[in-house]
Length: 128
Image 1 (tube, rainbow, N blue to C red):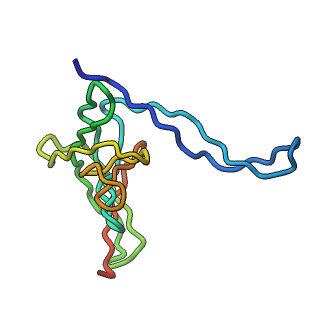
Image 2 (tube, rainbow, N blue to C red):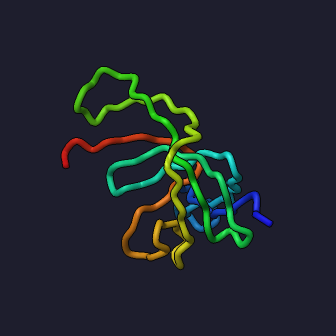
């Protein structure tokens, strides 16, 4: 049986604590499910995706790349705007939870392609 959600603790920002007089990090537990947005993070390049499967233990997530159509006229620029749509023929990628709490394509901590949850983004870095 496949699990339908994965829970992640995510940083939400900083708030001033009146009792201590210090800024403190604020974290929130967020739950993602099959069908939610994801972004494949290749160092500086990014590709939009959709979560298509979550393992029963929540430690493995499969995503399928979405179609991204560029809608700006900026050429080889850092300012890039895209429209996104599901692509049933898109490549499927598997990500595993590592000991730091990140999902990577190889389950390792120090290197590898990572997965971001909750947003779709396409970006091509023309400087490489």
